[in-house]
Length: 315
Image (tube, rainbow, N blue to C red; front, top):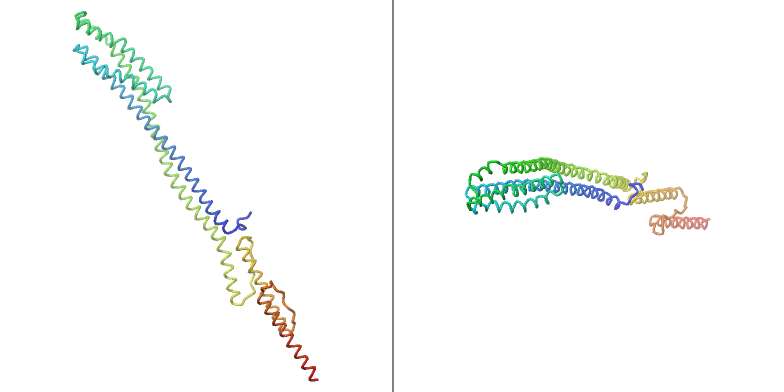
């Protein structure tokens, strides 16, 4: 169906629906972009949390090493508090960190290597050396032997290996963080641009739709107003045309019928003036002007009959 043939209400509603559809599309686009941006920022936060947990593992390793070395030097159990506390926290935190990066199998594997190396350090270095230091305290071993064992630096090799794994782990997460921050910035920038452009497009489209519909409604009305002004001045030589089938088209058709009826009345008046007393065809039973014309014709015919009768009597 042609747009011109739609009812005026339908035309206006179609304009609102078109603008509403644009706004809904924009809202969906903003919603999807917002979700994407939130998801990206959550990954950034996730990565920063992972880096923080990994750095905490390094701190716990340092705490263990400090307590361990302090005990070897002083031989007092209170020096083992950082060692024991760090070991307990390390075991819990590395499990937690594995769960946090469970979506990244290579990183999980690095943590498993770190956990294995940490357990090996405990079993092969710290436990034997702690036992040896207790033997020194009990007089079962001498300090020189303890020092010679410590100078083998077996523990340092383990610590260097564990720090290397943590540094590699953190480096990979840092690279991911840079990438995810760039994605977040890109998503944020795109969302701002999309919202701005889409809003301007919606405003422009709404203006064009409103202008188009307004023209489709106002132009026929303006034409009919001009025709009505001419008719008010007595000019019936007007041509009423309409290509639409809406209310304005119906109104134009009514105007056309009215003009045609007026032309018939004018012709009837001319016929009367010429002596032709032919009655006019009524447009309806409420055609006041047509009824008045016919009554006038009847009165004139009656007057003519009386005149003719008087003329015959005079003869």
